[in-house]
Image 1 (cartoon, one colour):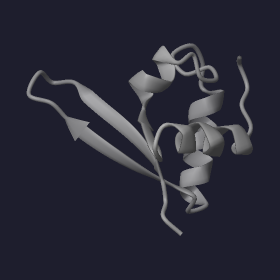
Image 2 (tube, helix red, strand yellow; image 1 turned 30 degrees about the vertical axis):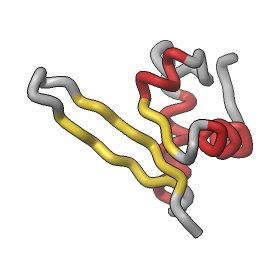
Image 3 (cartoon, rainbow, N blue to C red; image 1 turned 180 degrees about the vertical axis):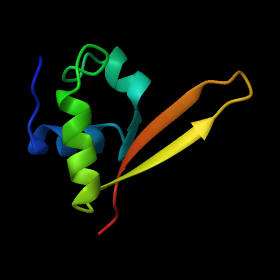
Length: 73
């Protein structure tokens, strides 16, 4: 699956309890996460439109964890 729609992103996040990390998306083979930028661009666009939020966490092992969340309406 290379391209995903807005609807697919929202359904995927709902199925994951409202949020998912980039690593979870990659493990689920969601869109082109880990292989391209189309899905990330769509996530960023949805964030700019106020549909999603993004949390960034830095671990002591110097890893960056990015979590995408559906905004509560």
